[in-house]
Length: 336
Image 1 (tube, one colour):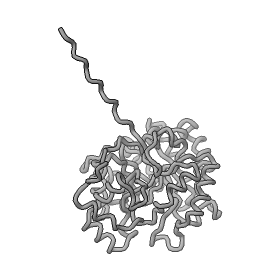
Image 2 (image 1 turned 180 degrees about the vertical axis):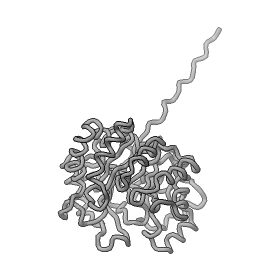
Image 3 (image 1 turned 45 degrees about the vertical axis):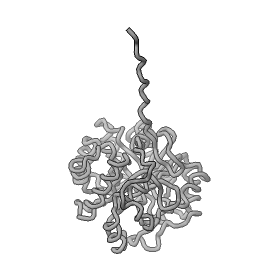
């Protein structure tokens, strides 16, 4: 009997993190700030814009000196992402940077931009920025950032989250959600995971520390999502003084592998180079306090292994650029 040689199986594609300098293996992230901003402009934050590449470079250098090795920028489309500067900043600082596509709350944008996006196709824009690049910068986004409302989801949030889910299914990209003052986590899970079939472990829920409801935290973790504790040092946000209890409680319940830490610097005055806590505070202030409560091993996972898992993807191949007939029309949209 003649034996027929079997065809070797191709190895499964590796999960990779899409940084502004290209895809990299999750362990290469090292110590990661899982939610922050180098650039951000918003009508909600007048005269506090993060729009200086020089200041961003100084802040990254301070973060690197404190031991930081990677940063996930959650600034979405139309909010001054500084996409054209991110690759150079990453090379100069030695810090991995992941950029975002997506859309924030309606209040962050002029109505005419939202009207245009509704006409030209929001999901197409997200997919193009994930697979081809942001405008003509050559920088590809590595996550989709959207936002909920205070204790609920309005029509704008449902529109943006539906588009995010469509782009996720086309590319595999993770979806990160701004929870307004930490609320609405279960509504987001119901929509994105329950109705729109986004796998819970592809979802990152942000700002849970701003609403220190341990029951909601437990339910969100039990559903399978990643939980981001971000934006420390804000006295009006019940953050630093309640975060250790929340982290310890979740870790003790078996959810240490789903927890992330971020700084969420959103104003110029909050940068360390301007006298604020800035990027280094996450490692110099928050980390030792959490280690006292939850242990060094838990905090190490939050800063290293967990971000690698949360933001790594088996990226779908869209090399032909043919996302849909509408995608080409989006090339004139704001760089943002």
